Length: 150
Image (tube, rainbow, N blue to C red; front, side, top):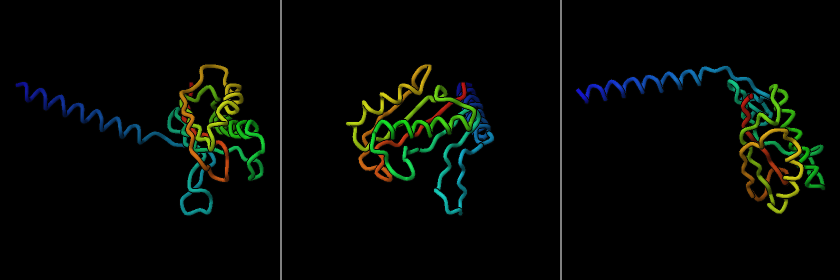
């Protein structure tokens, strides 16, 4: 009897998990700054919205393809790009729940934080600040994140 209850419970749990995965996979997706396979653009989209969750690709703070001379200006530029992407999805910086900052030199930690803290009006998201060495285009910062609509 116990074996049949255990098998029945296992079967019900398996069906529940399968249905959950199918429902999650069936959600509509929308893309911010999309890039299509086979095109000549970058092989990624700027962000992907699934349900109320927005996944933001890594962004840089370049000006006309160049790294600004001031680390704080670069931080401002990259955070403006994140903010603009969130706004395209009808979200704000306060909707961010997780942020990763890749930094070419962790000596820029304080300069980045001084600018970063000005972009939020509510709780700060969970975050990682990662010393990553050389970044694309010799940028100091690359920021990616996950936002959930409040």
